[in-house]
Amino acid sequence: MIFSSHKHVVLLMTCMIITLQISPSTATSSPRLPFTKIFAFGDSYTDTGNTGSATGPSGFNYVSSPPYGKTFFHHPTNRYTDGRLVIDFVTSYLSLHFLPPYRHVNLSAADLDTPAGSGVNFAVAGSTAIEYDFFKKNNLSFDVTPDSLGTQLKWFHEYAEEQGCEGGWAQSTKCMRLFDNSLFWVGEIGANDYAYSAGSSVPSSVVQSLAINRITSFLEELLQKYAKYIVVQGLPATGCLTLTMTLASTDDRDNLGCVKSANQLSQSHNTILQAKIQAYRKQYPHTVILYADYWNSYASIMKNPGEHGFREPFKACCGSGGGKYNFVIFEACGSPSATACSDPSQYINWDGVHLTEGMNRVVADYLLHRNYTHPSFDYLLMRRKNHQHRI
Image (cartoon, rainbow, N blue to C red; front, side, top):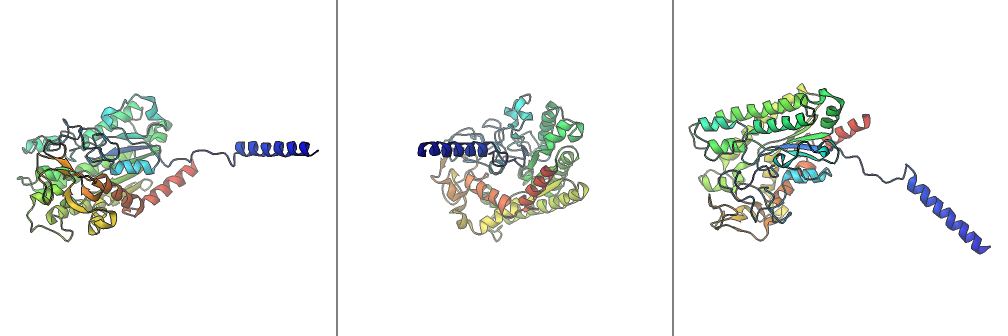
């Protein structure tokens, strides 16, 4: 009798476990992701491999060689850093895979049109907002990357065409679903335009006007036909980069200890860009447009670098020459005369122009969690979640 009761209890418990396992209310399933794809654009701060040592910007011809990539991937990935970029932290936060570079993607691959494909990265190191012909016409094309923001838009059109969606979301239900589930991330772009024309006879005001024009034309194309959710990064505090610090006069400094003239130029650019973005919000009220404040996030970190573990705010971790900046032009990171620091996490600058993974991590944290996007990134996710509940 006791044995029989015991069997009954075991049978009852087994049935309860099976019921719980198959019950819809308790079944385990992966949470619905806010986005299934990210399409990224920009320059070397966002490029995950569209250039290499032989095709990247002049002066940084060793990105395909160690010590690039040493911190996270433990081998070079053609990212201009020791590990991950801001866009890598964004994709991880959204539970997506790292974005493949466009030049290494098979556009006809079936997984690009399924949730398994996390998107495509169109960013190019050395890219400008203004087309290459402008720099060539003004004799500013010394080993300048010929790919501009227009090139990236052309590549995106090729991708959209391969998916049968050249006409954008209005072309079909499939296209609407593809772009509705996608986040467009426009990384910083324009810094190279100012750098390539610095010291030339072309006024910075002309470069600024043309760069803003090309960026806004690019955004207009995305907003008209493709993007429902888009993040646009401003320029960083370019006056705090090692290269800028070594070239500028020591009396050209701001309250951050950075190059005042360079930072003011970036701020001016960002102010105009934000005004354009605000106008687009009114023009496209059903699209969520975020401005990612790269400049102020960078500046906030610079005001108290030790809070984030940074010991060296200006000195390049990987470079040559030693001294205050450890940077010599054309003897940059990866060259035979260059060496890398033992702990990049204590440095903000990786190779004199690009940032360490540690800095990229903190910047990403500021943008994703500390309200340095306007409106906040949480607001974007809330809008996306509300839309998902309606479909």
